[in-house]
Amino acid sequence: MKLQSVKKLLMSLALVLGVSTLVSAQDTAGSDANYDKGFRLGFGVSPGYVFDDPYGFALGGDVRLQYDFSKRYSVTLTTGYDHFFADDYNNIPTRDLGMIPVKAGFKAFFWEDQFYVMGEAGAAIPVTKGYDDVSAVLSPSIGWANKSFDLSLRYEYYSDVPTIRNNDYRNGTGQIALRFAYGFRL
Image (cartoon, rainbow, N blue to C red; front, side, top):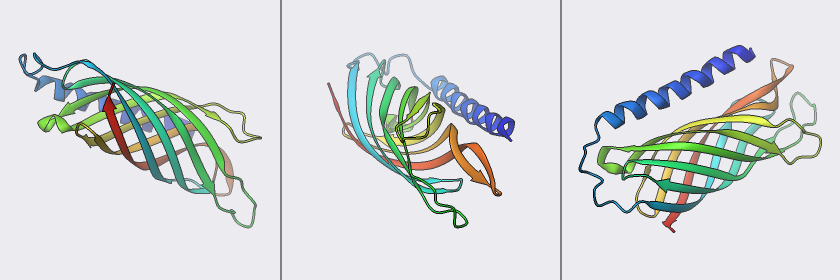
């Protein structure tokens, strides 16, 4: 089952990279001539739906540092806190899980320079007592941003989050999350 999860992650990453390549083919040479390159800082909140038991809901907050190479291309560094809320599973008590993800990514804007695709990868450090496994994190996303606000939808996969599937304990889960953020130029 772990091999299937890895295949899904690689396919998601390939999709984000493929879309980024298509977007770059549409870029024109003179569109970035007067663009002011530099850093941006954003603060976001992300409610999410977790796909595997015993978790059903996740809530996260993040800080993202972004460097704009051009009007269309940026690199990102994101950290924050994600909290997975656990429900009792078949009368078995379960615990919530807190993680601190640290991710680096690439963002490519297209269509009026406001819509984007982004891929991030990194690690998530557990902060809940009793969970010691650091998870790899992959998260492709699509979103809309202007000078101040950013709204995105992302799929995020954590490789070593303990889950229950078909009454079997396993590692790895995904979530789909909506990110609302406010950002500004530094």
